Length: 75
Image (tube, rainbow, N blue to C red; front, side):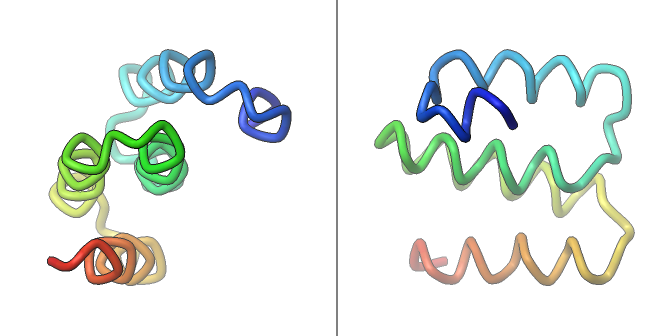
């Protein structure tokens, strides 16, 4: 998140992926990774990241955030 806070989005994405390799069900990484991809202008990749999070997460709050993010992107 430190890279995100510094607007270093391209540097942040490998960190989100590394977290997800360690814990594939960590929903916050999908949400923040998707947000980061949006900031990079990679909207289709952001959608895919959110969808991956929905498939992996069982937490209702996280699922709600991921569903809302997808809805904002028109899905």
